Length: 512
Image (cartoon, rainbow, N blue to C red; front, top):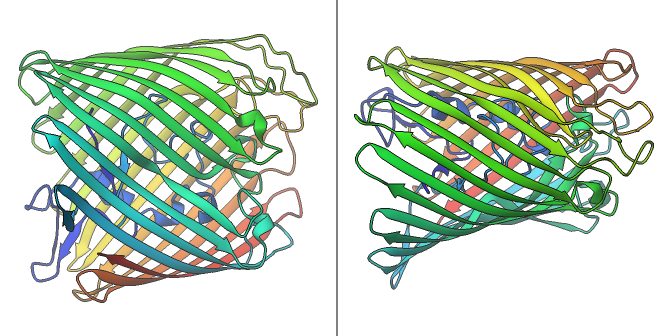
């Protein structure tokens, strides 16, 4: 199974050559970039981490603990992709201990947060974050490779550890999504991967999507799986993946979100010229909750997809198919549970078009409709639109603007259940400008606006505005410091729960 590296916004995916006055990719030295790569590092202000303060959470994705639930995420999948996290190393392996290649990175951050839970009555704290990143591989034989990639760290709340996203001790243990131990085996034309991936991080109850994160909780997740890729011939390829997922919600009041899921996914692709791709994919997931508050079920997805280049600068992707979710009859009813008896027999689709006008300007449009499991009902159905533009404005400067729209409706709303979900419409815009001032110093500033409108409930509609400023300085080829400032304002339209939040973050990272 192919592995990809997802870089953090701290380092970015594009290397700026200060002498040439252009952004240069490691994959393409002529400067043509993937727009997703360009935009990903620019969206730190709306990065869908619980403590980021952004309201840009996607209601359609909150039920998936595998990754963060951001508005700019790709099409939803419960098939546990084998992505990896590489926040500081960007693929580099800087040590060799005998036959083992090792890349090591250390990040230490100190943050002042004026309102750690973004409530009307603010509570401030100082938070220390330590993250150790490692990527190592050992070639057992010519056809067998053992590898480990991951980020492991701790957060320390100096004054109010009881208000942390999970746990009430002085230290919160974090394992970044994508932390993976994998064993790759090549057997003729078939590549097998046996993997175990784990994470421990904050998640969000999507009954509170849009304006407040004061219902965040911690999740420990472990995915064990076996994947196989068979290159049948030069045109045909078959991929099969089985994953067993155990998700444990942390905290005594969150056990209703704990679950196990067994998933089998397969895809068959046809690409005779290695330029366009046609294929079919699908899978089935068996969902079992630890507690009966939410219903067990069987989720089935199947469809087709195509990816076609139009000329040298445009790529069109289209996927679509059927979704069938069948849930057990509810045994817990309001006010203790939603009591949802809904099943789903519907469709999904995702269309995207990416255009690279030249080395300096790119834009992409994505439109989709899909259903996914929910934390306040059996499932949630959403229509969404994303659009983004990225351009090199002038020497040293890069600007991006992106917007999102989402209309999400839960399968069931029960006013007698305190945690019920409501129909939600969200839209927003994110702007970010970064400038390479010198070969060592980079500055960036951003703005976020988001609106969340709920149907059928008062006091939840809200607007949020955010401003960010960042300075990054490379002390040496291995060490760097960064200073960040965040200011968020949340205004509720029909309640007195308005809040402001100021964050000042000082960080140091070092690659050994």
